[in-house]
Length: 307
Image 1 (cartoon, rainbow, N blue to C red):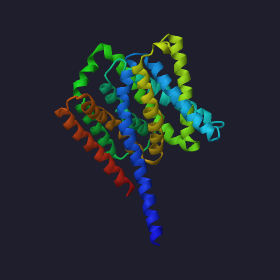
Image 2: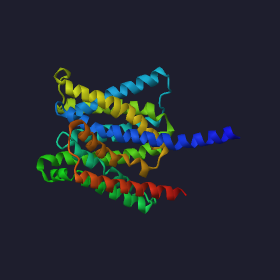
Image 3: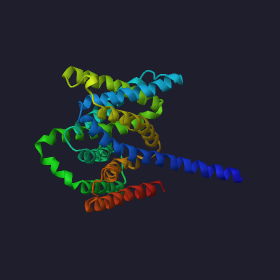
Image 4: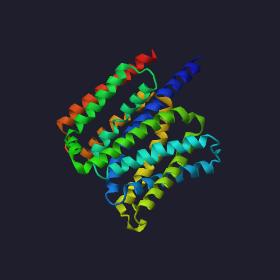
């Protein structure tokens, strides 16, 4: 009896703890990818960088599952994989990487944080009911992120940044649709094997675009800084973080999953202070408190809804 109780408690802890751990992993490492992307696109075309990141990451994923002799997707599953490869990688990742070519990584992180708003809007248009406190918490959280990066908000009125802002906004819309579609379809086949196939398909599309438009450079002309950025983005941004992302996406509600979008900019600021000695301002302290307050509302409302 005692062993049965211990097993039950352990199962509940794993059911709750592991998805939350995956969420924390995504919050931290996807927060650092903005810095890596900004460093990489300083020295090479953005879409080429995104394509190379996805190609290498895709090769690693697919090679592993080929070694494990995993079954290939069949029939209509390929349609789902193609759609996700376009939404999550070719458009969302490609456009967000291209966007930070023209705007600061901090501003890119701010714009990226609005994608849960698109999820709410899409969900409302579908006629689904949402917890009001959860929606209110999401709005407050985004307001907190804006306070944290208020120094960057002036970039919105600069003509040179408008194209980057447009690209970044479009990437968040694509990511919102991709997140909802992943939640709906991922259970129909191996989502991790599919992830590698999506990366390979999207990298092929991006390479074709960069080659056709003359937006690529010879590999020999890519400097070491960009290669290191690509390596970091592949290992932590594409492989490990996406494994954690799909895992949490399948086990946590959309409202909880979207939390990482608000934590990522905070992680970027804190790392900037620790690694580069950037100042922690009052705006960061106040904005952080507002953001965490909004996140508490989201968590509280979801717990109440399940009771």
